[in-house]
Amino acid sequence: MHSVDSTLSEAARMATDAAGPIWIMAEVQTAARGRRGRPWVMPEGNFAATLLLPVSGAAGDAALRSFVASLALREALVAATGRSDDFSLKWPNDVLLRGGKLAGILLESTGQGPQLRHLAIGIGVNLATAPAVADVEAGAVRPVSLKGELGTTITPEDFLDLLAAAYARFEDQFSTYGFAPIRAAWMSHAARLGEVITARTTRDETTGTFVEVDGAGNLVLDTSKGRVTIAAADVYF
Ligand SMILES: O=C(O)CCCC[C@@H]1SC[C@@H]2NC(=O)N[C@@H]21
Image 1 (cartoon, rainbow, N blue to C red):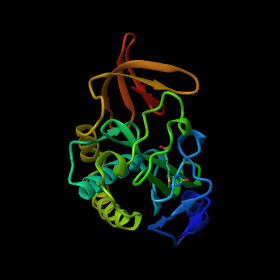
Image 2 (image 1 turned 135 degrees about the vertical axis):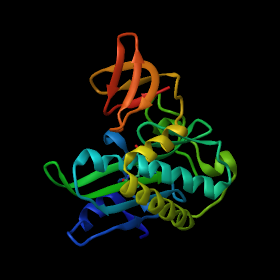
Image 3 (image 1 turned 90 degrees about the vertical axis):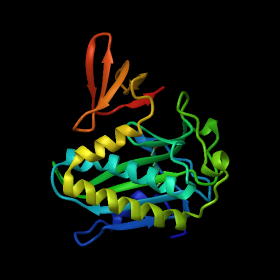
Protein backbone atom coordinates (compact mmCIF):
# COMPACT_ATOMS: atom_id res chain seq x y z
CA MET A 1 0.00 0.00 0.00
CA HIS A 2 1.15 3.54 -0.51
CA SER A 3 0.35 5.21 2.79
CA VAL A 4 -0.90 3.92 6.14
CA ASP A 5 -0.69 5.10 9.74
CA SER A 6 1.47 2.12 10.71
CA THR A 7 1.79 -1.32 9.14
CA LEU A 8 1.56 -2.70 12.70
CA SER A 9 -1.82 -0.99 13.18
CA GLU A 10 -2.94 -2.28 9.79
CA ALA A 11 -1.91 -5.79 10.84
CA ALA A 12 -3.94 -5.47 14.06
CA ARG A 13 -6.98 -4.43 12.01
CA MET A 14 -6.51 -7.42 9.70
CA ALA A 15 -5.99 -9.98 12.46
CA THR A 16 -9.16 -12.04 12.07
CA ASP A 17 -9.12 -15.78 12.66
CA ALA A 18 -8.43 -16.59 9.03
CA ALA A 19 -5.71 -14.02 8.48
CA GLY A 20 -2.08 -14.60 7.68
CA PRO A 21 0.67 -15.26 7.26
CA ILE A 22 0.81 -12.08 5.21
CA TRP A 23 3.32 -9.30 4.69
CA ILE A 24 1.95 -5.74 4.77
CA MET A 25 4.29 -3.17 3.28
CA ALA A 26 3.88 0.60 3.00
CA GLU A 27 5.84 3.28 1.20
CA VAL A 28 4.74 5.90 3.71
CA GLN A 29 3.74 5.55 7.37
CA THR A 30 2.20 8.58 9.04
CA ALA A 31 2.32 7.26 12.63
CA ALA A 32 5.05 4.63 12.71
CA ARG A 33 6.06 3.43 16.13
CA GLY A 34 9.28 2.10 17.55
CA ARG A 35 10.18 0.27 20.71
CA ARG A 36 9.10 1.65 24.10
CA GLY A 37 6.49 3.97 22.62
CA ARG A 38 9.00 5.98 20.64
CA PRO A 39 8.06 7.31 17.22
CA TRP A 40 9.88 5.70 14.28
CA VAL A 41 11.10 8.27 11.81
CA MET A 42 10.76 6.95 8.31
CA PRO A 43 11.91 9.00 5.32
CA GLU A 44 10.43 7.82 2.00
CA GLY A 45 12.48 5.18 0.17
CA ASN A 46 13.05 3.25 3.38
CA PHE A 47 11.54 -0.16 4.10
CA ALA A 48 8.53 -0.59 6.37
CA ALA A 49 6.59 -3.82 6.60
CA THR A 50 4.81 -6.04 9.09
CA LEU A 51 4.43 -9.80 8.95
CA LEU A 52 1.08 -10.87 10.38
CA LEU A 53 1.66 -14.41 11.58
CA PRO A 54 -0.93 -16.76 13.12
CA VAL A 55 0.65 -18.38 16.20
CA SER A 56 -0.40 -20.65 19.01
CA GLY A 57 1.22 -21.39 22.34
CA ALA A 58 2.74 -19.33 25.08
CA ALA A 59 3.60 -15.67 24.64
CA GLY A 60 7.24 -16.22 25.68
CA ASP A 61 7.85 -18.77 22.93
CA ALA A 62 6.22 -16.59 20.31
CA ALA A 63 8.37 -13.64 21.37
CA LEU A 64 11.47 -15.63 20.43
CA ARG A 65 10.46 -14.82 16.88
CA SER A 66 12.13 -11.46 17.33
CA PHE A 67 15.40 -13.43 17.03
CA VAL A 68 14.05 -15.33 14.03
CA ALA A 69 13.18 -12.02 12.39
CA SER A 70 16.57 -10.44 13.24
CA LEU A 71 18.42 -13.32 11.62
CA ALA A 72 16.20 -13.20 8.55
CA LEU A 73 16.70 -9.46 8.30
CA ARG A 74 20.47 -9.84 8.52
CA GLU A 75 20.45 -12.56 5.89
CA ALA A 76 18.35 -10.43 3.53
CA LEU A 77 20.79 -7.55 3.99
CA VAL A 78 23.75 -9.81 3.27
CA ALA A 79 21.96 -11.05 0.13
CA ALA A 80 21.27 -7.47 -0.97
CA THR A 81 24.84 -6.27 -0.49
CA GLY A 82 27.13 -9.29 -0.69
CA ARG A 83 28.75 -8.10 2.58
CA SER A 84 28.60 -10.40 5.55
CA ASP A 85 31.03 -8.97 8.08
CA ASP A 86 29.47 -5.49 8.13
CA PHE A 87 26.17 -6.55 9.74
CA SER A 88 25.73 -7.46 13.40
CA LEU A 89 22.84 -7.96 15.79
CA LYS A 90 22.11 -5.92 18.89
CA TRP A 91 19.97 -7.45 21.65
CA PRO A 92 17.07 -7.76 21.54
CA ASN A 93 16.37 -7.05 17.89
CA ASP A 94 18.26 -4.34 16.06
CA VAL A 95 20.46 -4.85 13.04
CA LEU A 96 23.65 -2.78 12.99
CA LEU A 97 25.68 -1.84 9.95
CA ARG A 98 29.30 -1.01 10.80
CA GLY A 99 28.11 -0.35 14.34
CA GLY A 100 25.32 2.10 13.38
CA LYS A 101 21.60 1.34 13.70
CA LEU A 102 20.27 0.28 10.31
CA ALA A 103 17.07 -1.50 11.22
CA GLY A 104 14.64 -2.11 14.04
CA ILE A 105 11.99 -4.69 14.81
CA LEU A 106 8.88 -4.30 16.97
CA LEU A 107 6.73 -7.28 17.94
CA GLU A 108 3.09 -6.93 18.90
CA SER A 109 0.53 -9.62 19.62
CA THR A 110 -3.17 -10.27 19.69
CA GLY A 111 -4.95 -12.86 21.79
CA GLN A 112 -6.33 -13.48 25.24
CA GLY A 113 -4.21 -13.89 28.35
CA PRO A 114 -1.15 -16.06 27.85
CA GLN A 115 -2.52 -17.61 24.64
CA LEU A 116 -1.61 -15.76 21.47
CA ARG A 117 -3.55 -15.71 18.23
CA HIS A 118 -1.41 -13.53 16.02
CA LEU A 119 2.00 -12.02 16.14
CA ALA A 120 2.71 -8.84 14.18
CA ILE A 121 6.41 -8.47 13.41
CA GLY A 122 7.06 -4.88 12.32
CA ILE A 123 10.33 -4.23 10.53
CA GLY A 124 11.85 -0.91 9.52
CA VAL A 125 15.09 -0.60 7.54
CA ASN A 126 16.87 2.61 6.58
CA LEU A 127 17.45 1.55 2.98
CA ALA A 128 17.83 5.03 1.51
CA THR A 129 18.06 7.59 4.31
CA ALA A 130 18.96 7.55 7.97
CA PRO A 131 16.91 9.74 10.31
CA ALA A 132 18.72 12.76 11.72
CA VAL A 133 20.59 12.18 14.97
CA ALA A 134 18.32 14.83 16.53
CA ASP A 135 15.31 12.63 15.72
CA VAL A 136 16.52 9.65 17.72
CA GLU A 137 16.89 9.24 21.45
CA ALA A 138 19.99 10.77 23.07
CA GLY A 139 22.69 8.18 23.69
CA ALA A 140 21.25 5.76 21.14
CA VAL A 141 23.39 4.07 18.53
CA ARG A 142 23.97 6.45 15.59
CA PRO A 143 21.44 5.87 12.78
CA VAL A 144 22.81 4.80 9.39
CA SER A 145 21.38 3.88 6.00
CA LEU A 146 22.31 1.12 3.57
CA LYS A 147 22.83 3.61 0.76
CA GLY A 148 24.83 6.01 2.92
CA GLU A 149 27.23 3.39 4.31
CA LEU A 150 27.61 0.97 1.39
CA GLY A 151 26.19 2.84 -1.60
CA THR A 152 23.72 -0.03 -2.18
CA THR A 153 20.44 0.92 -3.83
CA ILE A 154 17.52 -1.48 -3.47
CA THR A 155 13.79 -0.81 -3.66
CA PRO A 156 11.54 -1.75 -0.74
CA GLU A 157 9.73 -4.22 -3.07
CA ASP A 158 12.94 -6.05 -3.97
CA PHE A 159 14.03 -6.02 -0.35
CA LEU A 160 10.71 -7.57 0.71
CA ASP A 161 11.32 -10.47 -1.70
CA LEU A 162 14.67 -11.18 -0.04
CA LEU A 163 13.29 -10.74 3.47
CA ALA A 164 10.18 -12.88 2.99
CA ALA A 165 12.28 -15.75 1.60
CA ALA A 166 14.83 -15.49 4.41
CA TYR A 167 12.10 -15.27 7.06
CA ALA A 168 10.39 -18.39 5.69
CA ARG A 169 13.67 -20.34 5.97
CA PHE A 170 14.35 -19.30 9.58
CA GLU A 171 10.69 -19.79 10.61
CA ASP A 172 10.89 -23.31 9.22
CA GLN A 173 14.06 -23.94 11.23
CA PHE A 174 12.43 -22.50 14.38
CA SER A 175 9.26 -24.57 14.08
CA THR A 176 11.22 -27.76 13.32
CA TYR A 177 14.18 -27.55 15.71
CA GLY A 178 13.12 -24.94 18.27
CA PHE A 179 15.13 -21.99 19.57
CA ALA A 180 18.56 -23.67 20.00
CA PRO A 181 19.89 -23.25 16.42
CA ILE A 182 18.35 -19.76 16.17
CA ARG A 183 20.04 -18.77 19.42
CA ALA A 184 23.41 -20.14 18.26
CA ALA A 185 23.18 -18.34 14.92
CA TRP A 186 22.08 -15.12 16.60
CA MET A 187 25.03 -15.25 19.05
CA SER A 188 27.47 -15.85 16.20
CA HIS A 189 26.49 -12.43 14.83
CA ALA A 190 26.00 -10.62 18.15
CA ALA A 191 27.52 -7.17 18.58
CA ARG A 192 29.70 -6.64 21.70
CA LEU A 193 29.60 -10.24 22.96
CA GLY A 194 32.22 -10.53 25.73
CA GLU A 195 32.36 -6.75 26.12
CA VAL A 196 30.96 -4.45 28.80
CA ILE A 197 27.52 -3.06 27.94
CA THR A 198 24.70 -1.33 29.80
CA ALA A 199 21.08 -2.49 29.89
CA ARG A 200 18.64 0.21 30.93
CA THR A 201 14.95 -0.01 31.82
CA THR A 202 12.70 2.77 33.05
CA ARG A 203 13.47 1.58 36.59
CA ASP A 204 17.15 0.69 36.64
CA GLU A 205 20.43 0.26 34.87
CA THR A 206 22.79 -2.74 34.82
CA THR A 207 26.34 -2.67 33.49
CA GLY A 208 28.32 -5.86 32.94
CA THR A 209 30.04 -8.18 30.50
CA PHE A 210 27.70 -9.54 27.84
CA VAL A 211 27.97 -13.31 28.41
CA GLU A 212 25.17 -14.73 26.28
CA VAL A 213 21.53 -14.77 25.32
CA ASP A 214 19.96 -17.64 27.25
CA GLY A 215 17.49 -20.28 26.08
CA ALA A 216 14.57 -17.97 26.80
CA GLY A 217 16.02 -15.04 24.85
CA ASN A 218 17.14 -13.13 27.97
CA LEU A 219 20.28 -11.02 28.06
CA VAL A 220 22.87 -12.42 30.50
CA LEU A 221 25.44 -10.03 32.01
CA ASP A 222 28.28 -10.71 34.45
CA THR A 223 28.28 -7.76 36.84
CA SER A 224 30.27 -6.81 39.94
CA LYS A 225 27.37 -8.28 41.96
CA GLY A 226 27.24 -11.55 40.01
CA ARG A 227 25.36 -12.88 37.02
CA VAL A 228 22.20 -10.99 36.05
CA THR A 229 19.49 -12.14 33.64
CA ILE A 230 17.49 -9.41 31.92
CA ALA A 231 14.22 -10.04 30.10
CA ALA A 232 13.57 -6.57 28.67
CA ALA A 233 15.71 -3.45 28.41
CA ASP A 234 17.45 -1.12 26.02
CA VAL A 235 21.14 -1.76 25.52
CA TYR A 236 23.75 1.02 25.36
CA PHE A 237 27.36 0.52 24.33
O1 LIG B 1 12.33 0.98 17.73
C1 LIG B 1 12.68 0.11 16.92
O2 LIG B 1 13.87 -0.14 16.71
C2 LIG B 1 11.64 -0.68 16.15
C3 LIG B 1 11.21 0.04 14.92
C4 LIG B 1 10.15 -0.69 14.13
C5 LIG B 1 9.66 0.13 12.95
C6 LIG B 1 8.76 -0.65 12.04
S1 LIG B 1 8.44 0.14 10.50
C7 LIG B 1 7.21 -1.05 10.14
C8 LIG B 1 6.44 -1.28 11.42
N1 LIG B 1 5.39 -0.31 11.58
C9 LIG B 1 5.58 0.47 12.65
O3 LIG B 1 4.81 1.38 13.02
N2 LIG B 1 6.73 0.14 13.26
C10 LIG B 1 7.38 -0.98 12.60
